[in-house]
Image (cartoon, rainbow, N blue to C red; front, side, top):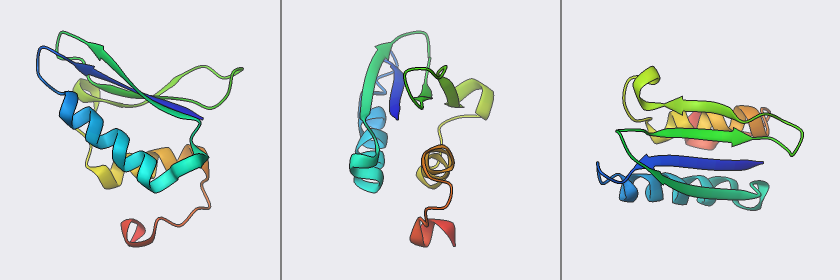
Length: 94
């Protein structure tokens, strides 16, 4: 599974995007094939997952659609639900 975090360079969201990437890698480690940062502009921020080469990318968070930036707990839940729904995220699930 690949995760791509699209972020706006004009808005200076690189540090936020990098932190999300670090958190996902810390939690899911080698279960994720890749976590990538994709710079953009125009206030664009979204997190996209691609399950495998045959799957279409799925937007699991979009700033405008979902009302701002995700809480890290919610982002991890959404990634987990697609990666391994049975996985326990410990304190995040409580």
